[in-house]
Image 1 (tube, one colour):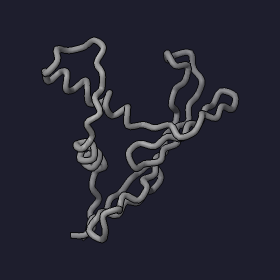
Image 2 (cartoon, rainbow, N blue to C red):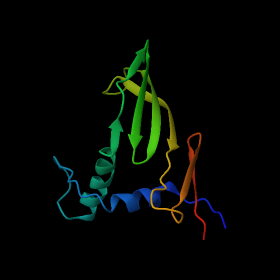
Image 3 (cartoon, one colour):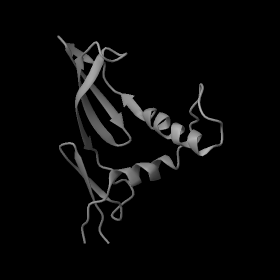
Image 4 (cartoon, rainbow, N blue to C red):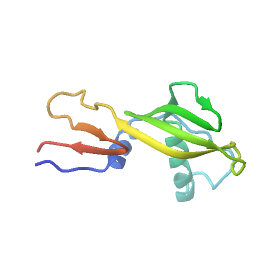
Length: 121
């Protein structure tokens, strides 16, 4: 039986093996639920790796990035409305093959910005 699964549980499972600490500046009291909630997105942000320098063409920037096993292209527009001077106007991610453990591993395919995981049972 083939059934699509959500990417988030897979990402969280992969992150379970990561132990890189994320420094906190100021925020909620350490060890609280609020601190855990604040840590999660900050930790996930560290999972991005920019693989190329941004390409700037007029008021448009294109950035290639990798998060976990997804290759992403971010298209940004120049703006005065954000602290960075850029606003992401489009993102496109395609999963790379996660199958490294043999025939029982899930098969991952990318369809545009949608990722579908098929697991045989």
